[in-house]
Image 1 (cartoon, rainbow, N blue to C red):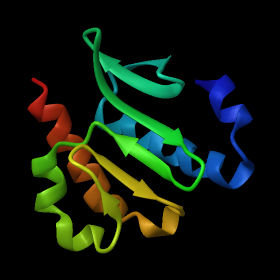
Image 2 (image 1 turned 180 degrees about the horizontal axis):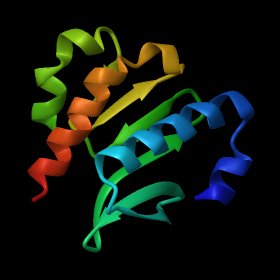
Image 3 (image 1 turned 90 degrees about the vertical axis):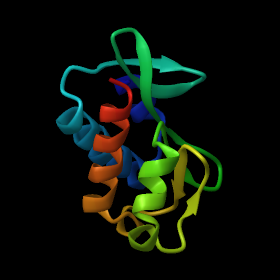
Length: 110
């Protein structure tokens, strides 16, 4: 994971480091790895979350659709898929809602 982050442009690296810390807080037992060219977090050998710096945005994967819908108002105009949130800057992320969405996903996987 550190190698991936070292290759990401500085501004984006800072964002992914913040997300990494949040994921570690929500799922401290998670292990890290790289899959599909993205930093991933696993629990019990099962993929829990992933994050990536794409060409036009950054993304957080592994969020449940239910968790995203519960926080739709807080997420505002962010581009959200069934299990991901796409964004361009850290300031766009309502971190309290992101933490809740991650907690929902962790609980959902149990």
